[in-house]
Amino acid sequence: MSNVFKAILVLACVSVAWAVQNDKGDTTAEQQQAIEKAVLKTHIQMTQADNNLDVDKFFSYILDFDKGLIIQDGRLFQTRQEAYEVVKKGFEGISQLKRSYEQTHVTVISPETALLTAQGTSTVTLSDGQTFSSPFAVSMVYVLRDGQWKVLHGHYSVPNPR
Image (cartoon, rainbow, N blue to C red; front, side):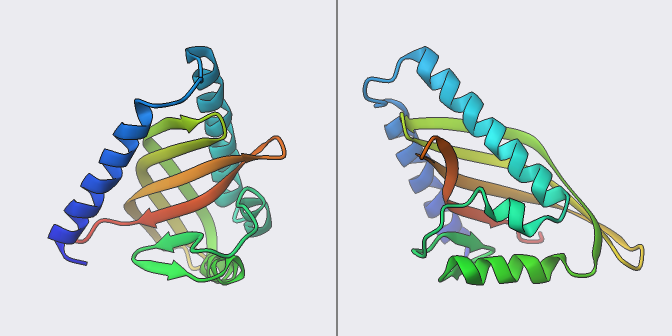
């Protein structure tokens, strides 16, 4: 993906987030804080499942439908099952995963929708003891369904090497 296209995509996402941040409907400041706290709690639980290499628990926080749910490094997974299988296969041969976040932001879009954007570092230890670290960025749209915050859409990427 060209840097120009990436820049346009980032600017579009920032514009949308800024626009919706200024129009949260009838959401009070206290409600917004409660939503941010609940989304962050769910995100922490997802990260714990990810760090524990628990694919089933991780996917329990992802809405169950098949409409372009997850994008990873430029690849759009067509179904939830396809994304599940890729993540499960990716965990094979890994003895330890530590995904840490340096910056995490929640933008409340409505009482039932929030955008989480974050950047951090993944450190992976393979079964043979080799360890690798890499920066990443993630954006996730969370929706409130049946009293639980679930990921409606997720996008995970690593920066291009310079």
